[in-house]
Length: 298
Image (cartoon, rainbow, N blue to C red; front, side, top):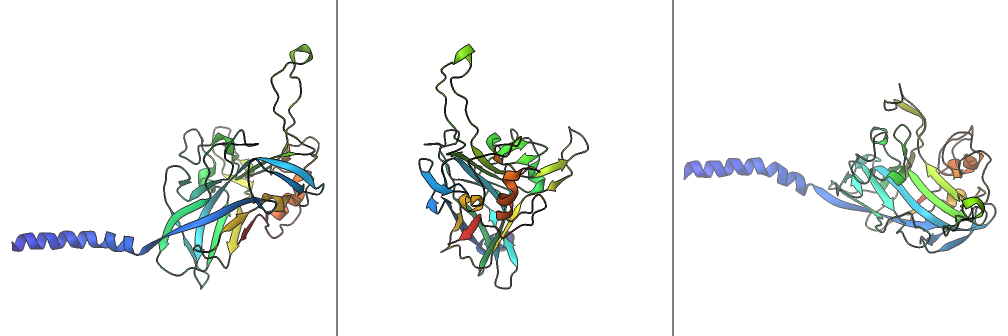
């Protein structure tokens, strides 16, 4: 009996640290509200007054990656949130926020949506929030067909040497509509009507250099990750509001700069990006960064 008691005591001592460690953590859920022009986002909604022309737009895609989420203590120190590895929306320290549901104008999207980041932190009191909009360099340059979810979405990927689209917001605007053709053939077998390209906001790293075409980049001149810090944030009461229309306020979404991709896709020398990148808190084309207007707290 003495030997049995000693064995049980030894086993309990081995188990105790794990139990104590679990008890020393608390769950946390960071909620996000996807909005557009100050309204809750919907794939079936049309939004007016957008950009310098006051355009009326439909949003055809609305997704973004968030990483390096941390809570702030009163002394300003940051404690990283250990994200739940759910096999779908979160992997390592990256999460996908998806506000489109495949309905209405979002025909190229998916039915599933996600507006919450879940994880845990050491027990304690927290007063603020920091996060990064983007995918960390270490995860940004790989084959998405081999990557785990949510990094396996080819719709959120440019190519392995450039990496992921950190933000993907696509618009059909009054001046740049996206029309679905009915497949009818015109003269000579050509489509009956061309399909305009719309206006897109795609944020990602650019000018990424690698030793060769078959090797991953060693650096990107423009990382284009947005660092966000809210000194006051209570996860139990507050929500992070995302509104891309705010960063388009000084952009003309009804036209596109000649010989550039549709809208602003982060690449250098695109006049459509000058005001948009600044409003996302990023320097671009010799223009300094302004205060980021994409995310706020409510």
